[in-house]
Image: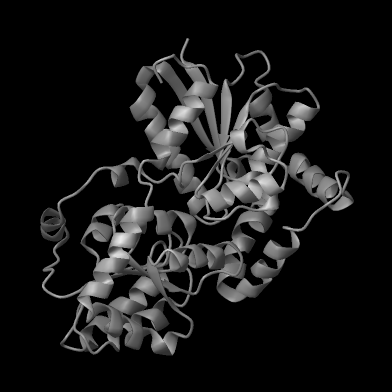
Amino acid sequence: MPARILILSASVGAGHVRAAQAVELALRETAGDDATVRNVDVLTLTNAAFRKIYGEAYLDLVNKAPHVLGFFYDHLDKPRSPDSKRDRLRLLVEELNLSELSALLERRGQQPWDVVVNTHFLPASIVASLRKKRAIRTPQMTVTTDFETHRLWVNRPCDHYTTATDEGAAYLHHWGVALEDVSVTGIPIHPVFAKPKNRADCLKRQGIEGKRPVVLQLAGGFGVGPIEQIFRGILDMKTGVELIVVTGKNAGAKKKLEAALSDLPKRHQVKVLGFTDQIDELMTVADVVVSKPGGLTTSETLARGAAMCVVNPIPGQESRNSDYLLENGAAIKINNLPTLAMKLDALVTEPKRLQQIKDNARRIAKPQAAFDVAIRALRMAGAGAGV
């Protein structure tokens, strides 16, 4: 009988869902008919009020009060007693609003899942709670999606964790996770990033000349942050560049940038895109990716060997992702947007320095992460000795 694997994510930002999709694709490619895979965003299994508070409120804070997210990140990363009233209350609220998830996990009258793979800590906490109550016995794996880890990712019982870095594994160990229960796989990204692509072919398909430095500005899947200010900052560069801007699902930002195309400095060429499934090719042609350092975007940039220009990291997980990139010489960081043009000019006019940053990006990249996670999940599910 094919292994039954349930992948659970939560659409709090776009990264957790994208990681789940990457694992799903890698499982289907690796196991074929030897696995039955279901991928569920748990926020689709709850009521509108909980979904708004848990998911949409996060994006509002990213845009309007990122420092608040940083406060909660640090506050929730502090030790709690095993019977912490705050943690018990949080779990109770989650369970009350995710009864459909509990039903999906319990699968009464059906064959149980062989393994649950979580790319967010919310479903991991529900699985752990049901196992403590002996409502299910399904093993679970938790896949962390930033370059450092956090106390909220630790939900016992959990049979295995995957992390992006050795440091992330060491921090889970600090919270009591045995090191043999952690694999350093990297962050799972779409399997397409594991396959090399010819830059000249991508330039042609994307309609980009490639005669000047190529700068790719990203705003995440939902199109967050000061997109227009960053755009105008890049246009202040003295060096002519080919700029591609991806505004994600933010139609308003796309419209504003398109309106500005009629009054561009002649030294630049600019292309504005909305949501696209061509990010892997755009990153293949890019010399520099200007973006917030979300775990998935950062991992994709590293996989394609582009230099990263970090802007507006969310305090907490993204600021720590930024630290990791800077420690490894794979990025530059913009602390104040008025200096963006100056720092980009300095980078693209120093070919040796730019190449060194690209080389460092490739050195720490883990483009096969989704396949490594998939193989671990199949082994946990007992799906064949050959896996």
